Amino acid sequence: MESISRLKIVVASPRDVQTERDSLKDVIDELNRGVARYSNISLELWKWETDVYPGFHPQGAQGQVDDALKIEDCDILIGIFWTRFGTPVSSDGKTGTEHEIHTAYEAWKKKQSPQIMVYFNQKPYTPKRKEEIEQWGKVFEFKENFPKEGLWAEYDGKRDFEKKIRIALTQFISKIHQKKKQSNTPDNFFAYDASWVGRDRLITQLSQNLRNSCRFLLILGLTGIGKTALAERLAVELQDLIQDDWNNKLLRANFDYDEKATDFASVAARWLESLGEQLSPAEKKPELLLNRLIRCLQNNPFLVLIDSMERLLTENEDGSWGDFSDKYWEKFFLELLSAESCQSRLIVTSQDLPVNFHSKAARYSNFYQRQILYGLDESEQAALFEIEGLDISQESEDRPILLRLGKVYKGHPLVLRVIIGEINSHPFDGNVQAYWNDVNSKIEEVEKDLAEAEAGKTEGYDEWELHKLTRKVRNEVNKERLKAVFNRLETQVPDAHILICAASVYRIPVQEEGWLMQLAALVRRVEKQVCSQERQEQALEELLNRFLAEESVNHNNKRVLGQHNLVRSVALESHRNLIQKLKAGGEAA
Image 1 (cartoon, rainbow, N blue to C red):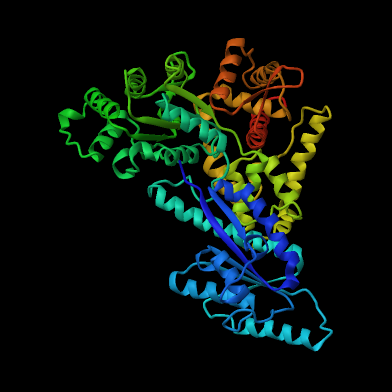
Image 2: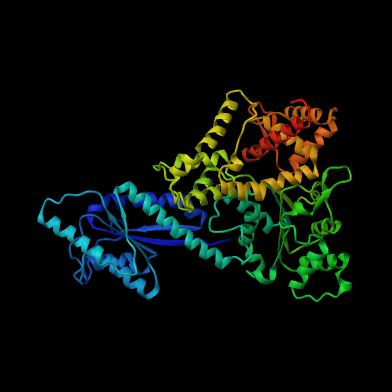
């Protein structure tokens, strides 16, 4: 289990910025509930008011403070100035704040720690006495003579300080988390990165199951929902099972690329050869490789990660989808599940449920688990925005906008990360309001339709563009991910493609009969024939197996079917294209 890092933060300032000093506790508490917790980091605030006890010291009061705060050993020192510089209290003739910043700077010169964050308040101020002018002058002098290695920041009042220190601490946390991740993970982990947030309960539950009897974990869900990232995160959580030996105890196959060989023999041979085993041409027969690999995984602890298992599947004999195109994959998985013992653990991701294999694997309920993955909840969405440097604090004007974006996309991690990347890049450069002005019409259209649906208008041929929100979303989400899913569906199971298009008229989940009624109507228009009940049910089963239809229970305790907003956005466009083809072909609209 990943250990928690404790970061010590010391604040140094004269008395005229007490409001800012006091506000630090709330900022740090908020970060500890969000981004710091998700990064396995705990922030601890130290200041003389709460962490120094009364007493005598040979170097006076400042010596007592130094012994208690131990600034040279802290991780961050925050210095705050406005109009006062303070009065000399230390043996070196410096003011308390100046002495504490100097102590931190001397420590930094030796070991590049602590990080020193100094802020100057720019709130307007009019001195009334000569002493006040002198104090303010010393602040300016300190600012002008700031060490050449350092960079200070300005702020305008308490709220602006809270915003800027929150962003700075979040960036520092992200940097620490990235370093921890790099030291704990292999180079070929690409999905689990410093922006990972949430899934805490799920990780605890799944890792515990894998530490116990579970040998095969199948993670299922929509494209871009975070399946591979979760698999990598679980591997990090379980690295002690392989004695942190990523080079020799991690086996991985990623089938998310067409050029990758998907037959069992090629992958098994590659894995065995990576472990130093010599294989002659005669020994590369599938049945021999199968037995050899099974023995290896049974008798030695390995973590096996397999991505995009849907690319290993083909059509079943009954015309449905979900059999392995290479029978040795199913043999491999089932033999591991049925073995008397097995030291290794398999974590597999897929957009599609391998139907026949699942029905067989379910017999080994102690060793096999299926986990469907959904989007991030609101708190996890907020943590994602926060860890990427956006202001999601309760007082922030950006918070409602960011949460609206998260809600309309149902916490879809890939889309939210693409949106965050756009906000933080040119021309928006972190300006959430400007980004909102650019996209709000498309988001508000979806919100309006969903509100109408809640009020009773459940159907509509809406023109959603969630999959085309911006150029980057079009390229990185729609073009690279969603189009491939819909094209694969149309090629492999045409009826399921027609069904998802037909059911896109529903704005909210409805009962199964509504979906099948729409399919029957559209087939009648396309093919001029009746769509049988068996055909309808098989098409629906395919959508459920590919997680393109979402099951839930409504307020009347009835099972209902719906679509993820992002999926519906694509399905609506596909539906329009289908109708246009009908019209072009002379069919009745």
